[in-house]
Figure 1 (cartoon, rainbow, N blue to C red):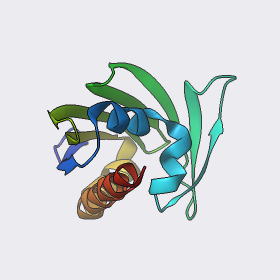
Figure 2: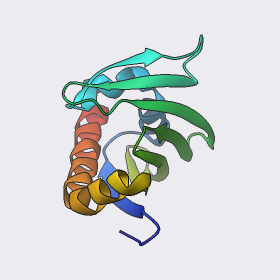
Figure 3: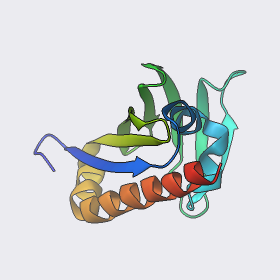
Length: 145
């Protein structure tokens, strides 16, 4: 973690599914509870799904998510915000073959305030492990569709 309170986590893996399908599933918030084991549900914040709430199964850290325009099927971006941390999530999808896609998921965390900085510093290993766990779960989910 940097002194300015930022931390970056990158997970790269190959998914045995077409690029378009991988990008479509990654971008669809309605699928998130199907592959994120710690997510209870999503709730729309506005009439459309451009902003939605990520409600965890445990704990109180609720994120407000906002879809940021990407370049499907090559790139998707999501901005997450909570009281102690903001996260920029970027998915990049590179076609390796008709049935294999390289997924590079990058998460940049910006911890807020003293409590957020402390949480980020103490939790950086757990945060990186959770990111990898989510992406491996996404890979299994995408390959089963």
